[in-house]
Length: 222
Ligand code: DC
Image (cartoon, rainbow, N blue to C red; front, side, top):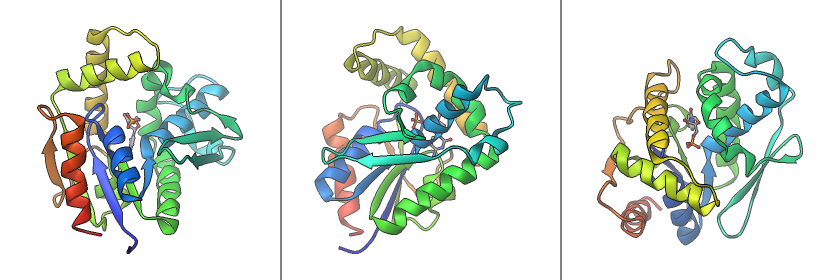
């Protein structure tokens, strides 16, 4: 099989990660969750002190070492300077601070270079916001996944439930709207559909249907 790069971009809760993970497992590609890296960098800076738009992200980055361990079930464990942060990076505290961290150009360059390193060794399916536009403008296939805010909020609530957490759906919806605004207005690496990306609205689709559709598209470029 030739080495390929598949880019899946889209807003929070559009189903990118769960779908990409399943497609990767079925087809034998390496799934890379770029959001986990932004979350890990956010975790790293929160350990050091308060995080806001005025934080100097450049200085600390040289002390931040991120390693990912890919498991056979398609999941991945993420370590920051040796600490397993796989669970803690999914917290609401991270979600509240990640906007400021992902706006930082040095952070984006740092994450992008890690992401490109992965693709040198594996065929990858990578999800994020700017994979098809910035990280891999030369991707073999680009997909932009979307869904209504209501459906995305309810998917997130279910994810939290699976982790044993009860959250307020209205609050999650507000956070998603805020994150959409932040993700779309970022001066560098903003969430935008690449011109050559395929737009897929998953509002009325279940996971199985989305996985099937994407597997079909991926199989055409293998
Ligand atoms: O995919 P996610 O929800 O775990 O991503 C969390 C945040 O990370 C998202 O709101 C913005 C940032 N991010 C980014 O700026 N660029 C990416 N390629 C992936 C994530």
